[in-house]
Length: 221
Image (cartoon, rainbow, N blue to C red):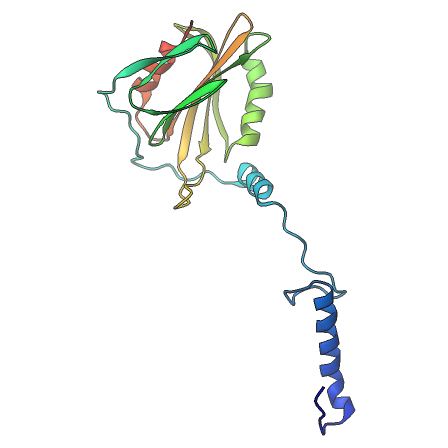
């Protein structure tokens, strides 16, 4: 410690400050902004849990694009995808990328996607069960969920319950940009087997005819 010609009383504040900084360092306070008492800043929560909770519960709907990318051309050729594990088949646009699991398949192009999953089911879905079980589950796991409709529909492949809702897309990993998506979700049932067909596109896309082709092509195999 260097000596000074200043009186001891003049050095007391500096000594007190040095002692405080040393105590803070020993306590793990590296920011210099800890509250009195020596406690350091609280450890951050794991990023995955925090970001998912904030996004699913507190994110506002992003504005819909006036001319979003992803209109499915009228010239699109459709091919039949048959899932032997799910005992079902459906028409999908030719050339779309496919990701498969043991219980489903997803086809994507631009902002459009067709997701097909299958599972055991104890009984046919109803509008009531969709409102009490399906909708809360979708709301809990989606970004800025907004319900539009829940209804029973009759399709060539059999009766189904349709849930229509909007969500924000996941942020682009490079740009962070999000789009507002509208999803038509159909639940089918037959003899203890269930199937879910979800058709997703950007709000404002003109995909009425393509989604009609896909949904009406669903068949149990």
